[in-house]
Image (cartoon, rainbow, N blue to C red; front, top):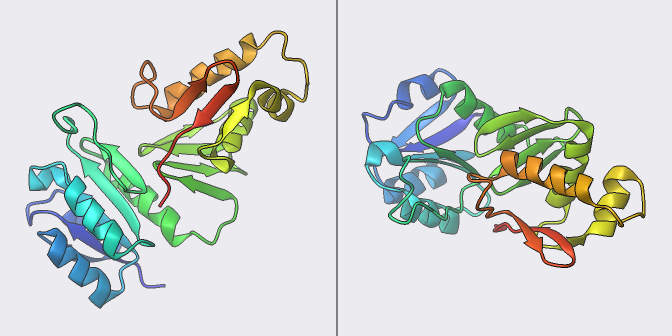
Length: 219
């Protein structure tokens, strides 16, 4: 498989030369140029370097996603992430601030390896089920068995409310829900891994009186 990718960013992008050591890289300075290259070169991944563009890059990501819904999309956001401190991106992998080339290449390589049925991908999250490794917002975490089981269940059921009984059955093999403090502690740990700010969860939402839900935009 030809590892062709498109890098959308200024020619001064810090990622251009390092990426060229690993992939056939086609460089574009705008979303329009990038989309044309995707179609012409049959690229399988796009990296939007918003830092070099001095913008959030979200408009470009949205245009790429509309033009090529199936392509792997990596979005490198500036630290600020917009005026309100949040940025909604349609990308499969989102980095906040400067990212190391190894982490960037790892995030891209997972898409070239997409035939692996043991890898779950949902929005900014990827989980290697067999190895119990979670990649969240570009950062890799090795999981304990309980946390792995809990996160796997959320990723397999995006945007569905999971009641406490089901969670206890799946992770702890018990129907007893009289004391769910253990579940609450593990949810806190999971949020620390999956949220940008665990104190203000955007993904793992509490459904009062019922359980929890992974809220995520699906392509």
